[in-house]
Length: 550
Image (cartoon, rainbow, N blue to C red):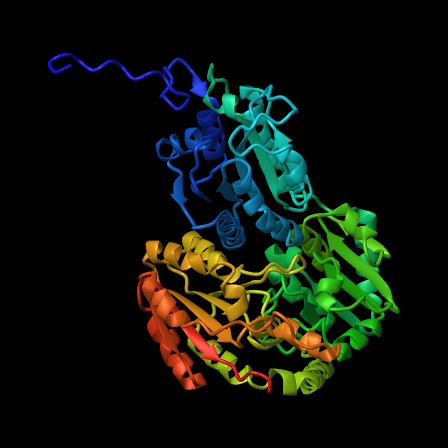
């Protein structure tokens, strides 16, 4: 009635708790901050609001992509560029399943990604009750794609779970971790105990006897070769010194792209998929493989039998017998392992003109074999290379313009990065990954490369890129659908089915989101558009039309 005070609203699960302790949500956020987390990606939902309530107080910035899968890809790229684990926050049920593809990609590419989510209450019955977002087991679902999926059962266990995740990131092959906190534990208040943090640890070093055996094999090698994967990223300088000391040509996986400058006369670039390079690899008397699975996803077919001694250096002991088994296993941190090898190898390597000529001949043979397939892409890739500085970050999609074009033909230097969804081979990675890379290093030029089919898996993230108001070119090679699958159907003699997509005015769509969009009908037009885009706040989508098969 008028003149009477309104009654106090009833208490709700989301009301601010009394300050005589910490809620599970603040315990989580406090633990993240204690481990140096300053950036998170995610989308708030009914069940995770207690996490979001505390982010600002603990100085954790947040970016909200338009889909949880985009949040996962952005956090993945943030980790790759910053060197710190990426953190993504989801709510329960469908949101967590939405990010599962990104978790699977991070697992495949050995990326330290931490996903935190609420879960059903501590004593929720096994039988379905119809609770919002209820599913039988979130942890079982995430265990299929993450290295660890942990459900906390107490306030103290929340901090322990975070410390354990960061310990795993530092001491093992980095892979994604999921932490689930029951809904009632998120809001329950408990006394504030000490912050549990991952202990400082020394990098793992390889066994001295194995190092001696590896050094002896490499010293005596007449035809050495080096294969680098993403696990060698922190040892770029040591990899180059070893290659020069041994006169050994270097070939990389997609994740190892640019560890050694791809313009160096000993670099074969990303060429494991090339038959001439695979033949060359099989003929080496000693192969040093650093931080790589030597997997079919990098070679596009099974690895040929190696005729010589295989020395494998990897932080993951399982890699010593996964795929081709190591003749000499070096289990340890790549940088420390290679420094130990360099200490007992001759440092002066000479000019190695024969090795340089062999590399040039192999690259020419590689390019001749794919020239008809790649020819239409090469002038556009040359235009991109001419515009970008050496420290640029390129993000990539599972698109023909990337794996046939940019990966083998767009040179990258050690100070740059090329981020590609290898192995798991997800679509829609490039745009949200570019957002994550730009968030990690706003001053650094970042360019997304995609096809029209892959872009439309995550095209809504153009809205997220507009939020950043930072220059972000998105180059889309438009071949009218799923070009790779179209070609595979044709090679089988099948009638192409469900691979031709109706045309979309992608530049207009970018403008509708508040960004910019242009069409580049020539390499010169692409170069000009890219230069302008690198100086224009917000995303600029540049479409490169590709001739479709008749």
